[in-house]
Image (cartoon, rainbow over all chains, first blue to last red):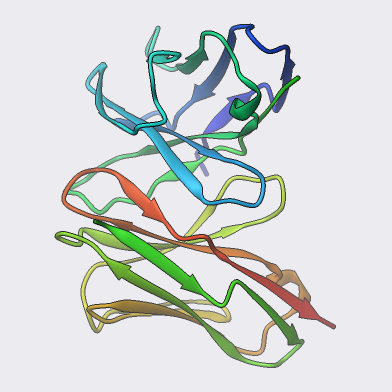
Length: 115
Length: 109
């Protein structure tokens, strides 16, 4: 069964450094998302991406964050200058959006630890 | 404001002891209600989509139902391998999915 893959599985970085989290969505999917989950808390929406542009973003997704689809398969989340509070699991998800109401399919996440 | 509330936060069951998890929601224009299972350190795994009140879906020991205000995930004769956190999410008029905080299920042998 096709799956969403994320790399790396764990990233440790120092405060103020830039990180890039990578995702390969399911190949025939059209909508791509980043979510995050701070330990013990809800899965929170960051951004959705469709047709090579951001379609929606949350208040969390400020100027420190950016997303890119550099080629036909990868989808990346960049955090320019990491803060301690960015420590969380970051999940990439994709959906095929056939008529709306299509489920999100998630990767297994990247655990980001900012020290 | 679109919102999802799940209860209970945690549930401990003996193997074979059936129970239900609740997901209450308020959303503008429901496009779908989704149930996921999440194991520790993993991403949410899709279980079911429900689109309209009265709809039911089943998979092994799990059955999901939907009304206009809430959804239930019924677990019949659970086994220890059903232990996980169960997440509910709704999709409204826009493409954003709103997640509840989840119910952490622990099934003891």
